[in-house]
Image (cartoon, rainbow, N blue to C red; front, side, top):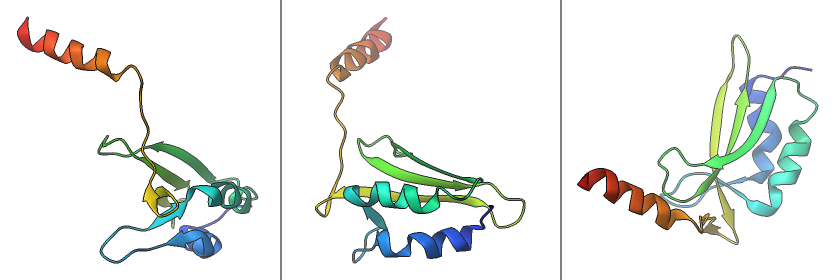
Length: 104
């Protein structure tokens, strides 16, 4: 089965929340339900990635591949109303490499 982006939006509407002056988000515990509800569609991919801004937060990306009516939906992932931040324990190495490249 194939879906258009409007069908996908209707299907995930119960899981999408919005806050005043903030972007739409999906709760972390709702991610399996979102993925399961969209699994019958062969042209829909659900993934969890770092944000485009590389600011340390995750986003849920839903891609709909269709000739007409396709696109990408992006939602913040929150846990108990707070943004879900990732932490890289080896990020200090990247900082050293940045300074090394700057100085030499």
